[in-house]
Image (tube, helix red, strand yellow):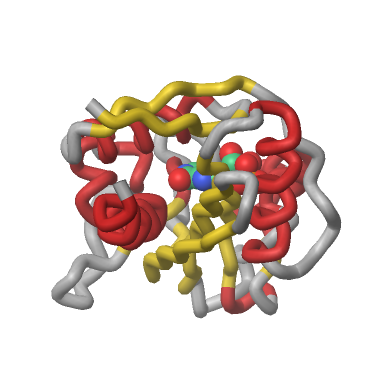
Length: 189
Ligand code: IMP
C-alpha cells in the first residue's frame, strides 16, 4: 500500500482526505502541525508556501491544503481569510452579513499542494452552492451553512454538515481537488 503524509492541524480535513484516498489504496499519515500561513488573496500561493514549509519540517513527500469560502454578494469575502473570519464572527456573523442580500450564492474552493522537496504541484477543486438561512446543528467549519449545488445544477436540500463524509466526498470541493491529485499521483508512483 502506498503512503502519503498529510500535514495539517485539522482532523476533520484529515478524515475526509483519508476516506477519499483510502479508496485508491493510499494510506494517509496525518502529521499534525500548525503551519504559518502567508497573507495572500490567493489560496494557490498560501498552499504552495505551506507545502514548502511543511517539507522543511517533515523532509518527506507530502500534501497540504488550503480552503476558502467565497460569498459572491460579499465580493468573495471571506475567501482566503476564511479561517480568521470563522474564528471571529463565525457562521452567525456570516448569516447577519447576508440578512439583507437576495443573492446567497457562494463557492467553496480547495487547493491541494504536493511537495517532494524538489518541486510543488497544485490541484484545485471548487463547488458552487448557497448559504443556508439557518445554521444546521451538525458539521464542522462552514459545513453547517453551506448547501452545495448538485451535478444536475439543482441545489441540495441539505448542508454539507448534514451529510456523511462519504456523501460529502462524492461532491465536495476537497474531493474534486483530491481526484485531480490522485489521477496525477497514480501515474507518478
Ligand atoms: P483553512 O485555512 O484551509 O484551514 O480553512 C479556512 C477555514 O475554512 C477554516 O476555518 C476551516 O475550518 C474552514 N473549512 C475548510 N474546509 C472546510 C470544509 O470543507 N467545510 C467547512 N469548513 C471548511
